[in-house]
Length: 221
Image 1: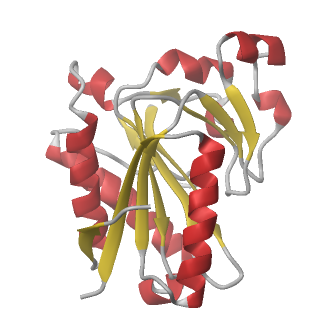
Image 2 (image 1 turned 45 degrees about the vertical axis):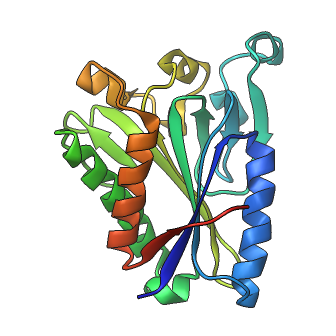
């Protein structure tokens, strides 16, 4: 079984984590390393995917500055999303040819990993036809956003953001993923109590490794 080297970086700026991803992706592309997984939290940050509309950032720059929220143009797929402490962000650096060579199948695998984590807490995670991510309560609220990039050499970057216990009011600053008629929620909101982020991280590592048939090992970056 191939290994999955897991790097848990704690709280780190979005741009710094992005640079780590790029470094690992170059190494993965050249065959210097195998598949890797970064797990992080970000300080308050709004990111714009390659389909994002600026008018979906609802707060003016002075309000974002007053609240300490960074605004970053990313090269991931998707639209506008929000990161904050209490959100578990996972960035798989995978050689896609070893996982079916199908981006849609890969994204479904990320969704399935999160659905299984939610199930371990007694929460039913769901997919919504035509939309990416994981939802709860019959699709009424999104609990995990997904946006990925595939390099020319077939290596994945970016990934998923699972709301464990972030300040959900930050999502009021944007139109999350460009969707106006559905809400945003978290594990804490659904359970009434926040599970430890470290516990959720370990469960997510286990599920990603299982879904993609990998053996997780600890790494350092």
